[in-house]
Amino acid sequence: MKAQEIREILKQELGAIAPEVDLDTLDGEEDLRDEMDIDSMDFLRLTVALGKRLNTQIPDEDQGRITTFDSLLSYLIKRSGE
Image 1 (cartoon, helix red, strand yellow):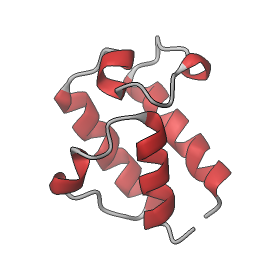
Image 2 (cartoon, helix red, strand yellow; image 1 turned 90 degrees about the horizontal axis):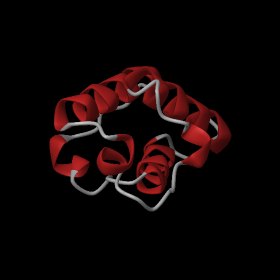
Image 3 (cartoon, one colour; image 1 turned 90 degrees about the vertical axis):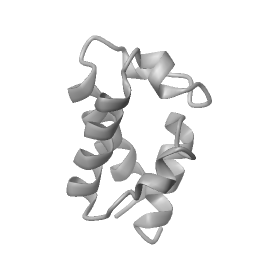
Image 4 (cartoon, helix red, strand yellow; image 1 turned 60 degrees about the vertical axis):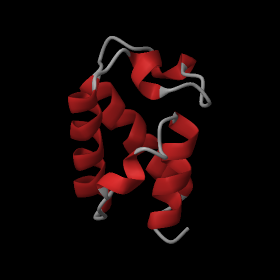
């Protein structure tokens, strides 16, 4: 899967979690939870949904390292073999 496809899937899933957030204005380096005002359960739902859509698992121990949009996107790209 290409990086742009993964970016779009990530945006779609973020939009499903927090539909009121303008995803085009996200700062890729800011903490997603703070920027989108989502809690840890929302973040868990996000990672589960991404795992299903991208056919990969995001282990609990990795979730602490993927706190920003950019880090999550990079992580997903690496997991997909790009």
